[in-house]
Length: 238
Image 1 (cartoon, rainbow, N blue to C red):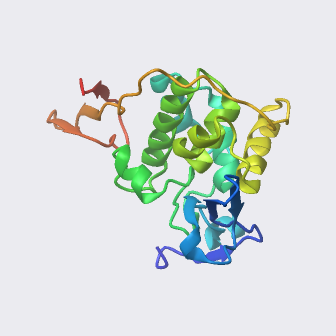
Image 2: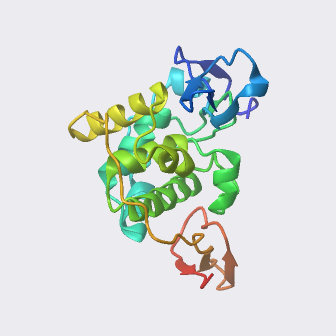
């Protein structure tokens, strides 16, 4: 990556992990600086500080160079193009080579576990990153019945954090993130109290496979889409 001129430069944003404990009075305490780490458990792992690539700082994205991938992902998964763009803007500012100090990568800042979950082999590949991030958004939108604030909160903090607080978690980073996404979309900024109905039963999301033919007519199937060309998406029964 360095050979390609992607020297990384830190942005001034500050992010922190959140630790919680239940005190002797039964009250949940949350902090990013636990006095005694043994008394607390990690409840929210931040994506860390965003690091922009040198190429991006020298030649900022015009925010339209990835439109073909955004359009394809939006059509395939039934997710709003505006929402995909808002998440990319909030996550990386359209920097394809952005990383974070916690290991998130690419346009939609996929953590390694999230990339594996959705079959993304190269998070710096714009098409793979956008398709993986959009599929995650689709699952979250389905889970939260189309609620953008809850979906954005889960994209930032994880589904477990949203379930634990039955709404947008009271983490400064997550609250700010939800406001940013809503602001880009022109939606009301308030995220103070937004509970959601917990589904009676939740199944693990099905595996996603992609099938396509290369230029020689050979059929391929894998858990990540091809970098170019058309393909068919297949969801496994489990």
